[in-house]
Image (cartoon, rainbow, N blue to C red):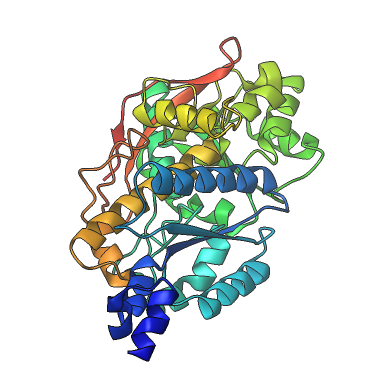
Length: 394
């Protein structure tokens, strides 16, 4: 009687005496998602925009969608500086600190980091994705818990090469790419596929991910005289400079790029030289106001007192990942399978979901989403305008 009276005075119900506080605590434990992002370094612009997308997405899941099966979704963020060693250290800190039944998803910052972590991620059975669209990672037989939330870089090259073929069948092509895993990833495929389509790769230019003088690059391109130049592996660290220099030097080739070049800042920084720049892009733009997710997030940010002006593509991509992962978590929780293995299972079953219009769908094929559109830069409009409907690449 004395123990019950003591518990009553503390405001604890009678069921507490038989272990209910432990059960309630277990139910209330958060579900955790870790994002390892380049908040500093050459791609800090993209990393910080992505961070904002993660923050908004997690807040929206908790405050509007009610969390994950009654549990709060908690976001962990670590800076990697776009450095594999620093990113690996951040990953090790997170996985050693967090409980496996709480930390259910990790998002990395690059192709290089993802390839370095892939064996350990597979060993731990940890659901994982990244800013990377590496072809190598989209292999569920080798990496059964890694998902690519978009087409691979090779898929993107395929879409661009198809467009080139439509414009000029036997085109001459130049490939300009950074000396990073990000830059190199789709180049073998692009060369092989171009040859198969009857095109000629007349020049390859390998550069650092960022530089201050594009004159040597453009002079080499002028000598090669390509019809099309595809840029890969920069995330706005070099594309505007290359485009401006090419215009100044009178290079008439049409320039193209993949997902991480599909940002309005390219038009703003390159000015008239950006006209006609063609890109692959598979999310909604912030100015696509008819997309439900864009309308929802505008209203949500306004309610939170956050800036509702243009949000970059890196924001949109991160937001799409959060909403899709949270949806898979909710479905797993509803089935009593809110575990790492359960999350993998329900990500693989997410084909009827499109993130409120942020993607065509989340129907994974070999753990990637092989759908994209092509957009073309309009300096007059100050935006990228779609020139195709959805292109299916598998």
